[in-house]
Image 1: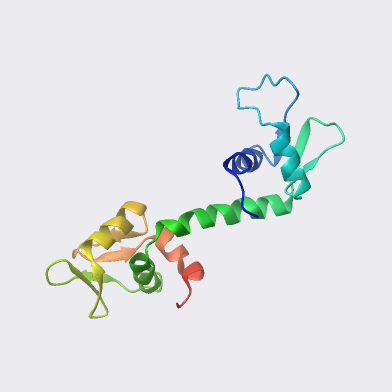
Image 2 (image 1 turned 90 degrees about the vertical axis):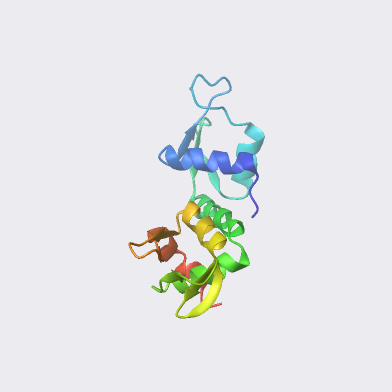
Length: 150
């Protein structure tokens, strides 16, 4: 299910609130009040469950999975084809080295240019080592399962 921004916000709030959302018709909480329409749509899709009390909504297992899956999907569009190609190698433990000009080499083959590596560095997927090369960070290593062998 593709979540709207409002639905994502409700699920994030529920997840950070111990799996529950407390809301009355006139909310005195400091956090933003969610619309009943948004809450009802999440109940219809099985992502939230309404308690008999009526002012408490509980995050279901499907809701937790949806927000985790949605968070993973949010990362994917940020990676270009070249970045995915680089991270497939680097998440397997390979290091990237600067080559001639703006070329970057992995295992002796040109894989991308320095601009691609700088973008991955800014995103937190790679770090520079003491020799001027790049290595995958913990976040970069975590991409291994998602990127596959390609």
